[in-house]
Amino acid sequence: MYIYIRKYITCLFLLIGLISFSQVEYHFADLLIWKNDTTEIYSYPMCPQNEIKIQKLFIAKGIIQGRSFMSCKYYKAEWKILEDKLYLSNIYSGNYYQDNFKVNIDSLFSGNKNGLIFANWYTGNIFVPEGSYIHVGGSHGSNIHESEWKISIKNGVILKEELKQENYYESIYTKNQDSLRNFITKQIDWSKIPVLETEKEKVIASIKTGESKNGFTIDVRSNNEKLSQEVTRVLQTLPEFNYYYFHGRYLGMRYSLRLTFTESMRPK
Image 1 (cartoon, rainbow, N blue to C red):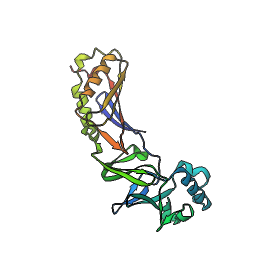
Image 2 (cartoon, rainbow, N blue to C red; image 1 turned 30 degrees about the horizontal axis):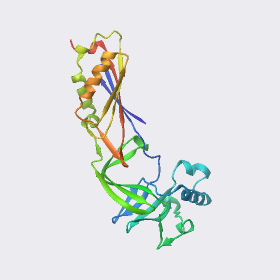
Image 3 (spheres, rainbow, N blue to C red; image 1 turned 60 degrees about the horizontal axis):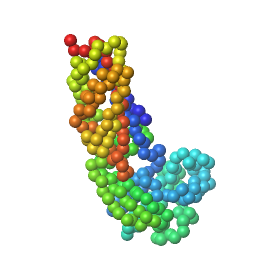
Image 4 (cartoon, rainbow, N blue to C red; image 1 turned 60 degrees about the vertical axis):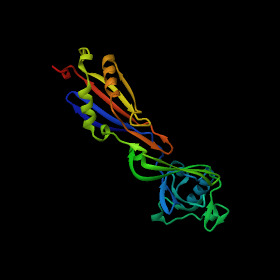
């Protein structure tokens, strides 16, 4: 998805667009009750076989129609971690406050223990957000939290809990559009650029985030080789840029820049 931010620098047109690696389709978040707190999570321990059972139940109740379930998760599952084990405690309709429909989990699962179903089918990770957050990627993007717990699970038993902190950083060059504009215009060395023979010379560049403030990479494309080299040089001198860590990995977010140069921009 592209988010375009338009700024004009005299005859220079600078466009910064965010390409997001969306982590999930639009889903209702599950709930996790853990450490005396209830948190929304976008990790889904319900296995496909159980989801099929739930789908049939929702269709029977008229909550969803046929195959529409497959394109969007229409329920909100509630989980609990007790004594280092993961339990399913409830399944609500995604529209619960309107239809008041809650699944009878006893009818779908065996082994009920005090209203809880031991999730022995699940092996994987659950990511639990903590602290402040920013949203990236538009309406279908992700909330990147300051901290994130990674809970490793095997057959419903908790194996390890790890906390990852400082999961995002936003540089001034994306928080303040004028900062990047001013940085580019001040750093370009026109003595390295031959007289432009065409009315407008276009350069398409991108900055891809990495694993630290200085881990970004640059890609520049233009029909004018000298312009391309100079824009590359300028962008590589950025002292810092953004990074994002989500669900156990760093996201490669790409900021696109489109620049147009004219001979009239050359200092006299």
